[in-house]
Image (tube, rainbow, N blue to C red; front, side, top):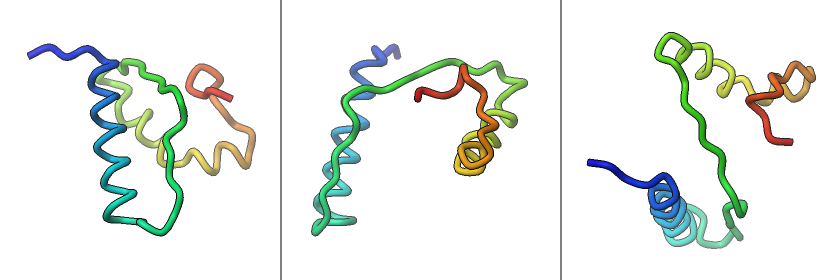
Length: 72
């Protein structure tokens, strides 16, 4: 099965917005940003990429960003 990335993101953002607005935080305002980014990761870099994402707050505090991985 093949799916266009734009269609996948539309469904993911729409479904998660509905869940957040109606189930998780119905009393709070929520809205996704207008765009999205996507990139591929080589299998041997999955763990490094996951660690980078999980520690993103620290990277921002330390200014130790990997420019190609950030949209600022």
